[in-house]
Image (cartoon, rainbow, N blue to C red; front, side, top):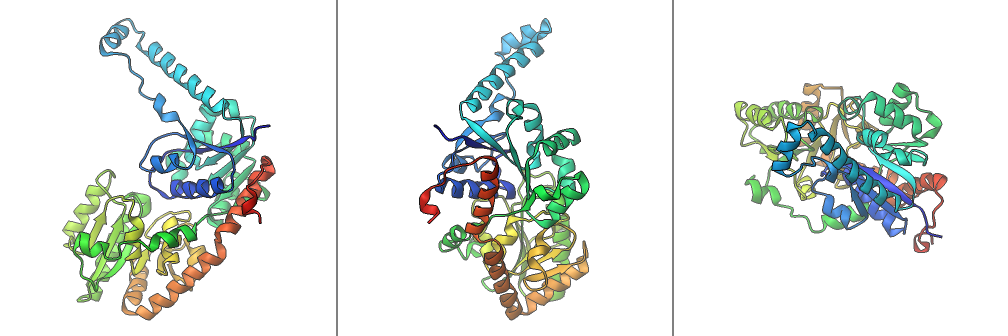
Length: 407
C-alpha cells in the first residue's frame, strides 16, 4: 500500500527566514525518505531550489485569469465578465484540487500563519486531516499577514503547534488560548550544510564589491527592508557608533534591502542626509548572503519584532557576537549574557554602547562569538532537531523512515 504523504504549505518562495527554514527541513526529510509534496501559494527566487527537493503544486497560477481582449470587452458590455472570471478560476481550482487529491495526502503541515486564508478557503477538502502548524510570527506579523477569522479557524483545526522560540510559543498560548500541552518549540539549523558552504565563501566580498578597506570593522544587519526589522534603528545606531569611534574604519552593512521594498528610498534618504553614504551600505537581496554575513564582526539585530531569525543562528555559527533588544522576540533566548549583548527594548544608546565595546575589544568579540557557536551546536543539533519534528509527524501520520538514518 502506498504511503500517505505530508502536504507542506508555503505562502511563497521568497528568500526569507521561514521559507529558508522550510527548505532546510524538506532537504533533510527527503534524505530520510519521507514522502511529501509542496503547495506553493506564490512564487519567489527560492522556487527552483524547492523544485530540486520536492514535487510542487502551484496555487498562484490561478490568479488573474483573463479572456482574450475582444472577448473581454464584449463580456463586460453584457455584464458577464465577472461570471467568466469566476468560472475560469473555479475550473483551475478544481484542476489544482484534483492534482492534490492524487497525492494521497495524510497530514497537512502549514509553514507560517500567512497560509491561514489558503487553508480556510481553498483547502476545505483537507479539513478532515490532522494539521501541524509551524508558526514563525508574533503580534505585528499576525496583524499584517492574516485575518482574525482565518487564524482562529486554523488554530482550532491545529493538532500540534510548533513555535520557533519560547517567546512565540508563549504568545499563542497567552493570546489565543492554544493548549500548552500541544505546543513544541523547534527551530532548525543545518550546521553541517552551512559549515560546508562556509568553506567556499568569498571572504573579501565587501572589499571587492563595495570597496571597503581590508581593516574595516563591519557591523551587519540582515533581512528585508521593513518597519518591523528596524532599518531606521540600525541607521540611528550606526550614526552614533561611527561618530564615537572615529577615526576607526567602522562600517555598517545591511544585507537584503533593495529597491523592491517600500521603505528603501526612505532608508537611503536618511543615510544620505546623515552624511553616511560611504559608511552605511545597503546590499540588495542575494543568494550570497552567507558570504556577506561571514565578513561581519558583529551582528546588530535591530528588529522591533523577530520571532527567532535564522541570521542570528547563522551568525552565531560563524562565531559572530550579536546585539539585540529584549522583548523583541526569541533571539535573547540564545544570546543571553555570554554570546553578545541583550539591551533594553529600543534603547539606541545601550545598543550603541554595546557595539562600541565590541568594536574596541577584538578578544571580547572572539570569546562571545565562540560561545554563540557552542550554544547553537548544543541547543540546535540538526539530528536531534530533526528527530523531534519527525516524532511530532509520526504521532499523526505513521511513516516508514529510511533505515540508513536510524542506524
